[in-house]
Length: 276
Image (cartoon, rainbow, N blue to C red; front, side, top):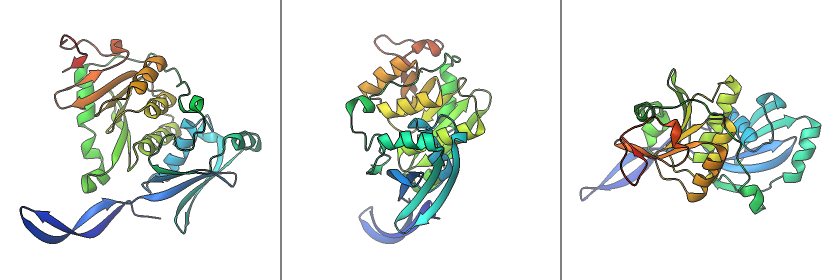
């Protein structure tokens, strides 16, 4: 199995000087997801928490509805990467053949291999109402992510996806060079632990594109918080899915784009939904 972090030699130019040294960087490898012997997708990702990734990817793609529907999962090193070999019941596997992908996806690609517009913008699941959150709760949640990212502490080069509740704090956190992969890994660990997700929030260290909303909806979290801005399609999808989309979350506050009623009143600034 690959180490998720490698140390490499490098030449650095700093303050007008050249110097030798080393740097810790994240590993990236091809991850082939196979079902009943056939390859469905090949993603580039961080070789860590791969059982979570395989299960979370299967759930977010709608291949299975529960981890128990995967009868076996084997992680196998091959010459140029890692195969995540899963076996499903024959009936489910035969339906899967209709949407089989034979394509290599770039790092964290969330829609690679989709061959129709309708499939790419498929409606997200509708989430439960869940609970409301105070602005300071979400600020505290986002501030708690960084110390819990061991790979990023070493490399400053990977994304994280976490699930947080007011009662428990960070319940689970997963890292990957691909933001979609990190969220799939999070989905996998939450599903295996059967964590109730309607009372918490998904936290992201990345921007929010439409597939990130789709994956969060599949998890069942009513709130998602991200450090960067969302796309317009992501905002429309979150509105339809009933998700409170919070983004541009920085040390001084954040912005609420959809379903603002889940965020208890903060200081209202005219012309924006910025909460401090």
